[in-house]
Image (cartoon, rainbow, N blue to C red; front, side):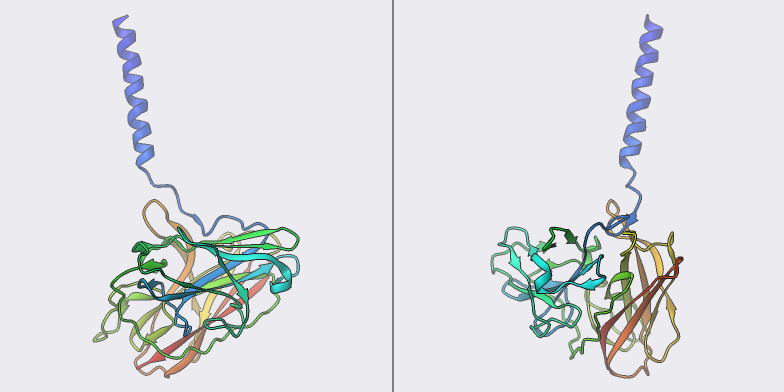
Length: 303
């Protein structure tokens, strides 16, 4: 009986420690936002009222949520007549309705849906885990959440880092395609020698100084299959900036230890002699099946 009891206890202990080890292991990264996107594609980002991409705002400032959505059936962007609702869900705040107006402050031709949130002066500092939700007139739904990369998530702070500013001319079109893409850029942590680093690295931006690191981030969906674009189905993924050859986007895991996700990215340090002014990063995906999709992301280069 004593040997039997010892054996049972040993089995229990082994199971406990094995379970503890498994519990301690972080989950494997998954394609962002999931292996497949059902029903409706949605992309969104936050900018200031002048169109400058930002994700850190102070209490009392205005945050522009801008978004676009694509109907997989027609492969075209949704406009006002296509939707029942389109709104941003912000923790502890009333629902922020997004309206379709491509000329609204912060809007672009692609990002035609916008809403302005004036941050309450007493709103809690820290990350804002917002969602953008849409439902079409035929009751199909879509949802957008941000990459789980803390420095680039919408954050309210009493200490907003100083960032470069400059006029950004939106380079965007509404094209029918078998692929629908999300693209943004963040300021990387690398710089050319002698160029100061950003106070907070990996924050969203669309204005950069020469010598700074522009990190393109992207994910997308094959609208005919609902599959998120990954190395399993993509033949090539590149970004091209004027005057340079196409650069390969890399697919890899990013984010916090317990919430890593897979998406496409590439860091490019702006040369010291690169032309100043508005420019674009032309992101192109081609799948193994020969389907293509592209996205022109506008940014500005300043001295």
